[in-house]
Every structure is written in C-alpha cells, then in structure tokens.
Length: 204
Image (tube, rainbow, N blue to C red; front, side, top):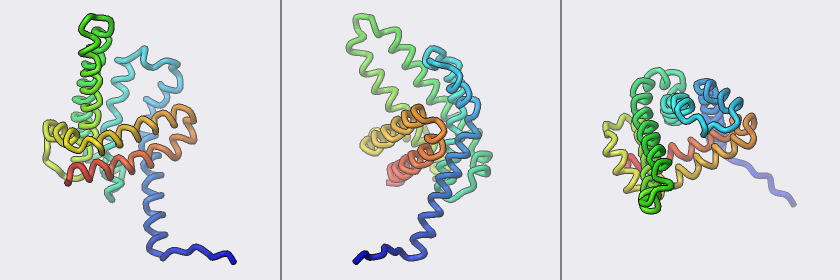
C-alpha cells in the first residue's frame, strides 16, 4: 500500500519562499549583467579580449552582493541600490588583482622560473576570488572587515572557500552549455550555496 508523503504547511511555505528568492536572484543577475551576457553570446572566444570582458565583469560585484542580501531577506532592487558603490569598489579590487596575476602568468608561462611561480600565482588568483566573494558577503551581513580580514577568513575556512568556488565554476559551465535553461535555474541555486558557506565562514 502506497503511503502519501506529506509535510507541515510551514515547511512547504519555507520551501516556496526559498524557491521564489532563487528565481528572483536568477532574474536580477540576468538583468543587471545583460551587457556581459550579450557579449558572451556574440563573442566566440572571450578570453582573447581580456580587457573588454574584464570591464564587463565589474558589474558582477553589485549584483552578487544584492543576491546575497536578497537571500538574507532583503529586496534585490533595494539591496542593489544600497550596496552598489561599495560592492563595485570591492569587486574592482578583486578583478584588478586577478587581472594582474593573469598577466604575470602569461608572461612567465614560458620563462625559466615559470614552473615555480605560475602554480603560486594560480593559487593566489583562487585566493583572491574566494576572498572577494567573502568581502561581498560582508556587506549584507553588515560586517566591518576589510580585504585583509576577507583574505584571512578565506584561508582559515579554506574548505568552505573551495566548495564555494567549485560550485561557482560548475554553475558557469552549466550556463555555458545551456544558456537559457542554465540562467533560469543554476545561478540562484549556486549563490544559495555560496551565501550559506560565506555566512558560515564570516560569522564563525
């Protein structure tokens, strides 16, 4: 005899609340990063135009901060407006740092010390991205930490940082393979995981 699966009403309400927030995050990310998405759909090999796409990637900072705030219970639009300036500044530092590291990797790739320095630079780029994500998460958490604290937290909580970056890379790959379906489902789910990891790392 089949048993009907049931759940309390408040459980379903919580589930649908989070589903709604994830969908809003997907829509908000798509709208606020429309120039980047259009450029990616037109250009076949975006890595050949690093400066152009680096500038377009600057818009990711405020939208990710707004997504974190929305998952924290705030309105996406209100959070985007409130955190735009500080999020843009913080993400510009991260993008600039990763850009400098990328230039060094290209320059040292065929040089004699490249075998030693390139892996170290790659680890540094990963650390910068992990710390940048935490630095954005500090905005909705109203945490007063600076970039040094974000770097130290990313190192100290490296399993959470590594999990967050893995989820983001997997989400980017999924969107690249199926842009429409991926944008409708994946980014919000990925940032849901990253937000909880970041909040746990920052508030621990």
